[in-house]
Length: 126
Figure (cartoon, rainbow, N blue to C red):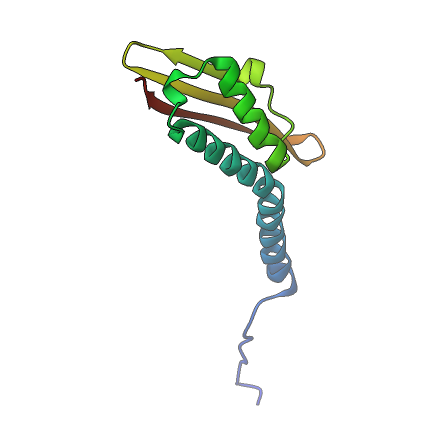
């Protein structure tokens, strides 16, 4: 038995700790970033729903803002300032509704993620 060298199989303890740390980091990112992205999906759905309304082309910015506020009350979205983040641009043949905003998500200590969302919808003016 003196001449035989046995070879170890598997991971060492420190290799396993590195794998667990990397997995934990990505799991933390997922749980921190999932809520803002689901909120964005709701805001985008509200934008598309408002743009599909039959009278959307004749609506004023104040009416569009009220429609967004109704949807935001239903979806429990309260962090969007529509006075600052909603832009309505009209041309003779179409109207563009744009909503843009930022989210800062604290990750750990003084590390944060900045998420920028910018969505537009085109509406034909009748």
